[in-house]
Amino acid sequence: MNHAKFTSPLNSILGPARCGVLPEDAVARVAGVRRGGQLSAGQLSRRCVACLLFVATLAGLTGCAGYQIGQQQLYRPDIRTVHVPVFESASFRRNLGEQLAEAVATEIMEKTPYRVVSADRADSILRGRLISETKRVIAEDRFDNPRVIEAGMVAQIDWVGSQGELLSHTITIPIDQYELRVGAAEQFIPEAGQSVATAHQRAIQELAQQIVAQMEVAPW
Image 1: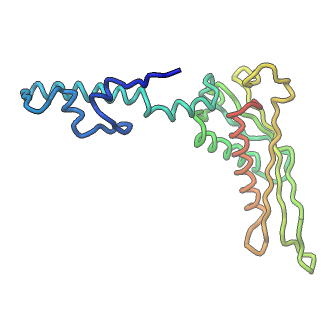
Image 2: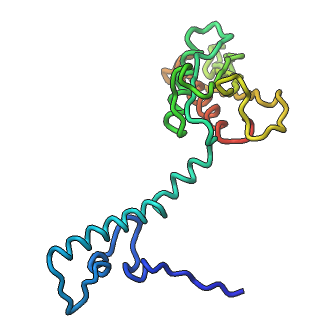
Image 3: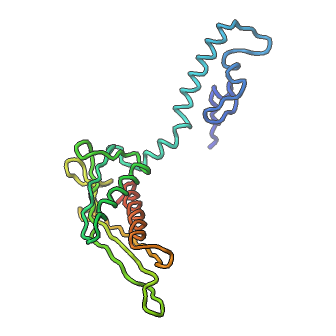
């Protein structure tokens, strides 16, 4: 089947143009200025203003907005705000729950269209709990001193609406699949001047990235 190529009347007038950039003579062509033609200064001014307004409006409705529309499709259209309370923690290490909640909130604001707000203003809540924190030696020197240590954490998270309802992309998912387990592990080498705190900070950042990435896809 042959398909006729559609050419916009505006393209025939303006000629090829990049998004938001007009050819140098585009305004003159739309305004009716041709070789040998004459317009008063007032007529030319009014026509140019009308032309620019029209083209700017058209550009805003077409290609220039494509990225924003596509990015919005990655996330739930019925959710605009998220509250991230301090994560519960089963670890004896202080402030890990606070650090993870802060990292998640920062990641949400930087990577998603959602706004992080207080609980009374939020239409959804992202709750979490650190259920495991580990540290184990995986390499020693000949004097049995630890040289490579792995620190790891595992978190459980769930995303609920303001009334406590579970959020998901489909209602056929069993309730036990709404709870997602994600984990992160980080190694550090004492000789390099690293510490358990350094390893945990990296693990927290990685864990926060995994949690926020799941706000785009099916497990919710």
